[in-house]
Length: 235
Image (tube, one colour):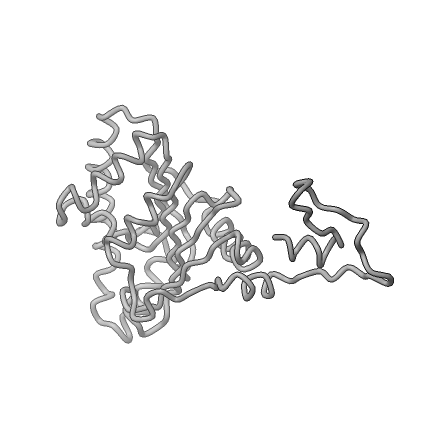
């Protein structure tokens, strides 16, 4: 931070006075604005692909969700993995963490593709040309909706201060987003593109820090906002 203030404002930190001073600029000093890329390089941080082989492990996902202070957004295709975690994994591994976050007032917003829209039909039919199991995509999405409805009823019964909302969107799916406190300066995003011909679980996953890569985070976040703009709450 001291170097950044010196380069951009020409102020040096004075330890004894505990303030930045502006009277030590050399003759001919000119501001040198440091780019985001330079800041990331200086801090040793980067947008790291933490699982080039595919989907986050349940422990990694829970670890990121537990960092949320305000909101968790999961935007996917069928949210089959998310809903299955409540039923196929122990409460200790997954459910209890979601409940704990809801109890602290963290809001959850889940988005999945409307299985009855034309975009869903086109998407799954096209994917099935390469991956035959995709023909069952719409039915699997409907099954996920049923599971999420049951999960919602159970969570609401606990009267937690946090909301648990589920939405349908109607666009050709392009990526999976897990967004933590997206409107906050400390926002994080887990992003996985849906690559044609590659099973979604095998698509590379990257983590984007808003503080470290503001422009990259902003670009992906704007894409999420456009995809979710006309989403319909289903319960």
